[in-house]
Amino acid sequence: MNGQTIDLEKIKNSSDGTVRGMVSAGINEVMVNNPYFAAGGGLMLLGTALALGRQGVVKSSGFIYRQLLVDLEIPSKDKSYLWFLEWMSQYKHRSSRHLSVETNYLQHDNGAVTTKFSLVPGPGKHFIKYRGAYMMVNRERSGRLLDMTSGAPFETVTLTTLYRDRHLFSDMLAEAKKLALKAREGKTVIYTSWGPEWRPFGQPRKKRVIGSVILDKGVSQTIVNDVKDFLSSGEWYHTRGIPYRRGYLLYGPPGSGKTSFIQALAGELDYNICILNLSEANLTDDRLNHLMNHIPERSILLLEDIDAAFNKRAQSDEKGYTSGVTFSGLLNALDGVASAEECITFMTTNHPEKLDPALLRPGRVDFKVLIDNATDHQVKEMFLRFYGDEPELCNEFMAKFKKLQLTHVSTAQLQGLFVYNKRDPHQAISMIETLRNPNSVF
Image (cartoon, rainbow, N blue to C red; front, side, top):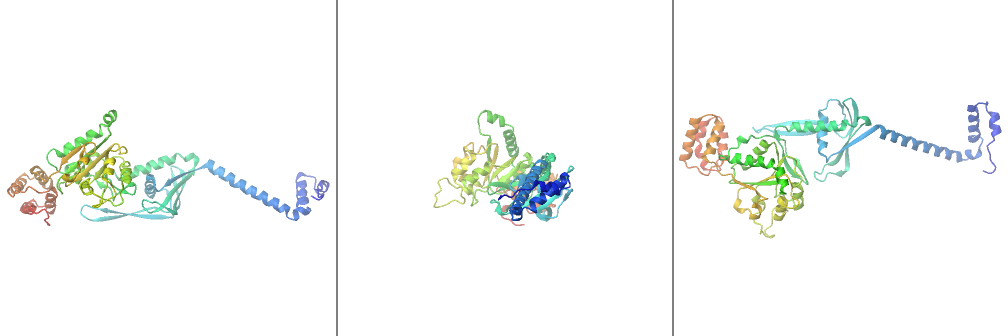
């Protein structure tokens, strides 16, 4: 450095003889009396040292964070996302400054509507104390990424706590799931397709009692017994290499109780219902196959009015279909190579004569049942169910019913008459002639 050296003798003479004094004198010699440091070289070295020190602090803090803290990320596409938000909205030991509102409508049997507001944690940071452990909850909403199925912004919830308390994450999620399932206890959830996934439609419905749907004598119990036998025969199917699925076709005139019975059957089995509309414009073969292979657990797949989707297999392209699903696509989804296992499928139709024979073969439809217009047995049982133990009035109603020779009366018509006169069986008897017209308006 052009002969520039550090004068050690000068440092020794200018110090007080102690180590501290020598260090102080050395720093003074280097930084003050050194022309190279004064020219900027020392400042560069000092800046480099500070940068290295800052980098060391950042790395060490990151290391400490990784060792002491743990994160759990819950994306909005995961089922537990809504479970956790609902759980946290009811959790007492939390501190939230950012809230979001969720409005739910509940329509009662009498037509009245009850509105319920739930305040859930909104985007931002929240703090909770769970079993003695403090956790930070950060709900973030992406401004660029969208959920393609719903169009809503993609969100994540990140939970942060001490590494030693990481086992509490599983307990918390299990508690959130239990709370969500408890809200559906004793109820039937109706699912509909939403893009490539199934989503609950409306609020869970109160389970319908199997006895509330009165079919002809022995029909209801025959179907129930067959379904229960299927559910208990999984090992039998697997041992013999038979696909473990069963298809049912309920056919008959409109208003005979086909869909109502399926809802009551779901309540009897403690199952949910997945309704798939084959006439949906955006439904394709691939999406149909995907949906049928990802049905929620303990659910019945319901294909209503199957005849309306496909009248004839030989239908030409010029006539067109009402959906993007092809007939072969439906057949493959029902019993093809990629068809679902452990699946109960119910199909309904008002016009079985319009169905292609290929759809009705065993493996696709294993059990066919006629749900016809009301028989004498059904008329009698429905009257007694609505008006209690009134055998004399029931006999009077039945005598008048037979006298009028009412042979094409649906159970929906009977129910409409009884509901209109729900507290007056005498008036129901006097209005029995209205059953002649299936479109009677009371």
